[in-house]
Image (tube, rainbow, N blue to C red; front, side):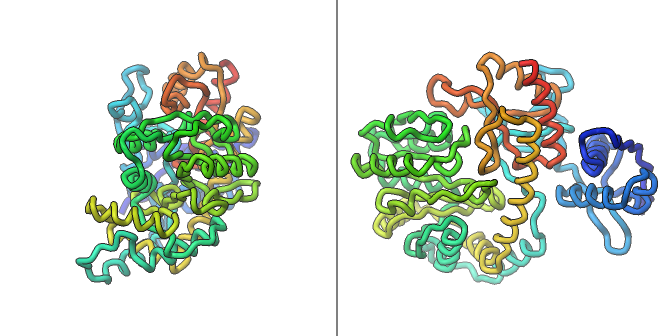
Length: 467
């Protein structure tokens, strides 16, 4: 067994960054750089506090954050060790900036799924924090799922027990009074959109998508023969007065517009539903990150205001992890029956064992506890962004991303320079269907630690000051 390593650490009491955050950042940087290797033992919190001349609380807080992020692990009766953090790093490099880190890209130039390069901070939206979860609850859920014998019958609605639990979750978390007869289990939001499109769209039907908005919705509707109609949004969300009258479906994100971050106010919600009743359009409400709200009261879901004209989509991708692959579709029993028939025709299904495991997480209250813990953690990161970037930020009342509006000419150079400094950023450009109307950064804080968020926002603040 290796002994503990001597650490070259220096804390600055005059710096605006808290000592615990400084210590956590330096330890994290040491692990990324290879100065601290997997399996090496760290000094005790008491010994390290004495060495640095700080209180033990400072060291404990730094250790706790690194435990939560997965960088450290404890061994009973033995001490604190550097975990196997190889999953955090890669050696890919950007050709455009020597020393800059980059991710592989897909055919459209979008960063492919994966982990950032060594020392890179990823502030692109769409990814939650997956390192801090109750491992005992997770193992317990999968043990229970393994105890359930495999079935030769596939229910197109999903497991009855999970539908009951999801209905109860929606009632408590979103104030939507539904029963299991209104819930169909999906594999996530994109899957739910596809089931709706396959059921209600005919070739050439108008499919409205917010502009800018969620690209996958556009792709799914187009793949099912829909005629994509961009529907402009402003800082509050979709504008009902600007909607055309010939849409078969309209996809919208009223709780936290993606990517601009607006919350659709009550008068607009009522106007949107009046438009839907007048035109006969079906409103597809994506509630993708509505569990996370900050300093604001929840607004009622569109579905609760008019169940006949709205389908509500939700997912565990943001609240738990994308890899779980469970979501829900809420609609009238009549429409659900049509969608269930579509599933049977397509031989489409959601994994039974996964449904069973999620049922256990919901039944025991483990998912609720995880959500409460992550609300606090995300609130800290969101507060750090607002503190550092100030009035430039909007769309910060909910969700896991904010919007920072910038002059069009400043966006490209700023993103390139941020990448050269090790910060990956997203812009509004790729979220438009036509020529971009809104310009700025879409800053996600789900997959970066609090210390990383602070460090990256300091870079952004420096660059925007010179933009």
